[in-house]
Image 1 (cartoon, rainbow, N blue to C red):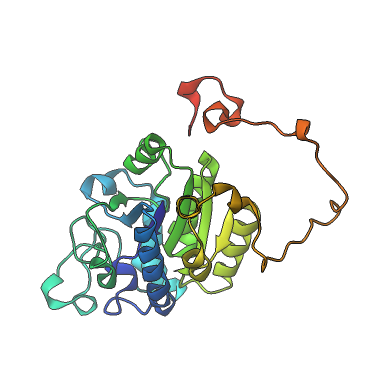
Image 2: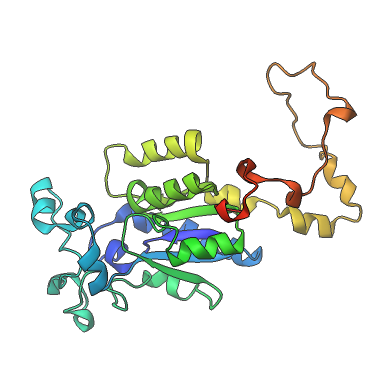
Length: 279
């Protein structure tokens, strides 16, 4: 499943802020979306979308990130406070008076270049934290567990904030995580994106890009196209095969292989179905 995080007007629309790095992700992300449609990959839009009840129970550690005075002291100055009215000079006239990232508002809606590429089959989830998976009681968390999805692709903004928070929780709960590096961006600077890419690639999953993803061939589609599925195991003549260092002379006998089906694999060695996080 492709999870697109916070590609909302509030974060990337030029009338509200200059998120040039976020704008750069639009073209590669649109190509990834087209590939997902072609391969029937589920698409999910995960966005900030709060209401008054969220504000009542929101911890200070969350609200402080949107504190206007503190942002100004840090040299940012573009946050107005969650749920606060947006300045008139930051939104189109038709949307003046909207509250920051409130559900149903224009500023909390999907960034306009993506709207025409959305389908009725897409999923949309709201969040009121940096992570969309911080609690197993969240609708998105429940949907993912019920769907038995195993692999999650990540894109959106900001790489070092909401994207990283959601990906980290997904990794901790046992999903396989793949970051589409050129489809993610941040305004932070300070090498933040590079550090995130490195940590994800080495500790929490995988990092690839839109070109590699869009150029990949579906295994299922290849099997259907092949007259003899066994030929898929034969490398093409143009393929370059290299042994893993230190394993050139090692061979495995037939009795060292174990055949099993996915249903026979027990994750985490947990026999209690109710205690499993993902099956």
